[in-house]
Image (cartoon, rainbow, N blue to C red; front, side):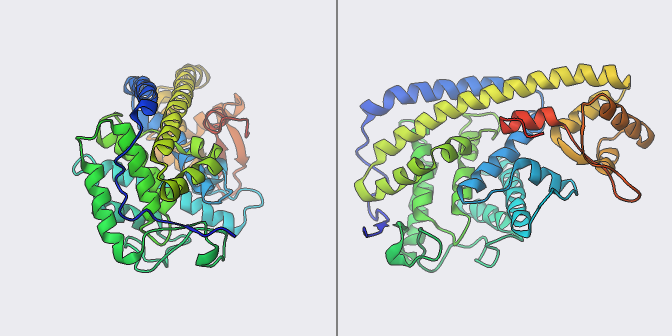
Amino acid sequence: MSAPVSYHLGRFPPSDLDWRLLIPLIGKANAALARYDGLLSAIPNASVLLSPLTTQEAVLSSKIEGTHVTMGEVLELEAGGEPADFTQPKRDEAEEVLNYRVALNVCAKSLAERPLSQHLLREAHAVLMRGVRGEDKTPGQYRVDQNWIGPKGCSIDEAGYVPIAPEHLQAGMDAWMAYLSDQTQPDPLVQLAIVHLEFEALHPFRDGNGRLGRMLIPLFLYQRRLLGSPNFYMSGYLEEHRETYQERLRAVSRDDGWTTWCAFFLDGIIEQAAENERKARAILALYERARVNVVEVTHSQHAQRAVDFLFQQPIFSATHFTEASRIPKPTATRILALLREADLLHTLREGRGRRTGIYAFRQLLNLAEGKEIL
């Protein structure tokens, strides 16, 4: 059995990156990100239209940690439904996903008034852990004991990776924050690659480090004005290449593989920016079609409000629609009936008596998931 890889104490930040290898990737990554940001700037209320992608990002980020809940299950639970064969472990996983989304929104709003800081990071961690697995592991506080990463239940000697020792953790976090805040670095995307890896390598909390580290990616891009909104979704690439992702992380501490890591991360920016752009364009096209279709089906002056609601909450209860769409209740009830008749909405649960109906805007869900789920 090979010995665990231990944190690279005294070797951060890296001083010998091979820029000849990285420069071609830097150009492509910045260009791909700029194209995506240009599209975002043209989308009215991007945070609303792309909210399903934000939820999907939360699902995929949690999936890297071993969860199995789907976006549809998360949104159905949030709407007050009970997906078929929904076990308590899946319910717990769904709550983790919803916490991720809330924590990301809290941080994004905070960045309008203050920069990323250790204090904001601890606040986000407390939100991430609220009421879910890990809530007993000092949410919002750095760990004071040694942790390690490996198969469930393994000893430290059987671990694959051992993060920084607790007596060095605060100094490590101070150095990490100083590097994150340094705007004299040669390229912000390479800087982001190193910021993300170092946070994961430090593993400062007892739980939730992976999700929080991936959340830092859109927040950094937003803070540095590389994106006009924190709507960048990287977890799809990291989940698809999970084994490589984890091996590249370990290789930095084991072999000083910083350049190889940065190249992997930049490839991810290039690939994910193109995929994000493709999905955003598809959602925008669907939005324009829906605006026309819903007017034709309902002949209502409230059609636009109905469309905006569907994009913000593609699985919802009839009760929530009538309360949150700002459409008069009789009209809202009529609009729902007409959209169901036109097959624009899929019924997940029929309303009976006091039990409200649950409906899904399947076209948007399928786009966000990247496959037919309904």
